[in-house]
Image 1 (tube, rainbow, N blue to C red):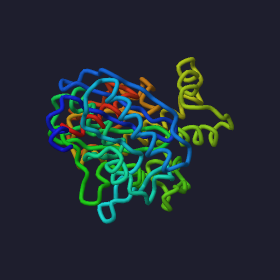
Image 2: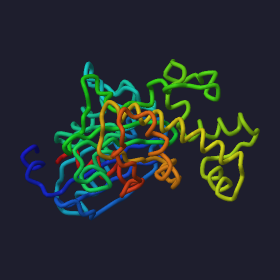
Image 3: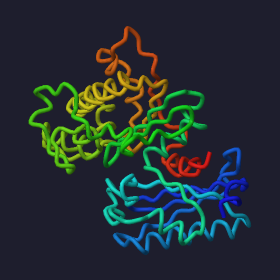
Length: 306
């Protein structure tokens, strides 16, 4: 099977999410030729593995050719055991996902964190095309990140490269205290301030209103000063957190993904929020929306065979 995978022009990517499994097939140049999505079998590991394998097989039958397979997951593979760790789809934790998929599909499978897949897609032919270092940010129900250097994912010595969401928020002020507890067992993690639910919680604490991020932005645009203040607090925190990344990685491009990346004002306002905290007299790093939006994860999984 390995020779076939190497020679095939077909790249198959699978995005294994908590609510949906999406599959994409790309020709060698990156043109999409097929895409499907199905609901993820909820909380059932074996049903999930069988569903992924069945989707791959159905895709290959439909296209009449066999391809390489990359899978993006909401977690990482332990370098010690080969089992899945840090997954917010908890039925995957402690399971030998790659080994099970390889047995079912009879070939080598490449597996990567979904934020790494997002960053890879945008670095290869998206908003970070041509950049030497790209940091891909996921701002959604959680906060994750991926690093791509010279068109290759940096996974790191512990398979956690890019996991900035579980660093402490830099320079917490009176507005940021007390430090919120995080599910990871620590307090004051970037994720507890910058996820979608965190923005809603912050707004509710300040105003008593329960609103989602999209509605907060709509109301701020219409002149609601309390909603505007919530977004300003969010942008100030995000600016400090990204400045920490820029000071270490110094990427040419930061691509914002996840549900909150749809807030247009972030791309306009973040350079000014980062700038004072970056150890430089000028900020050349571009902060941009993704070219492929919600599809970047699945495309990046296909590009794991690059």
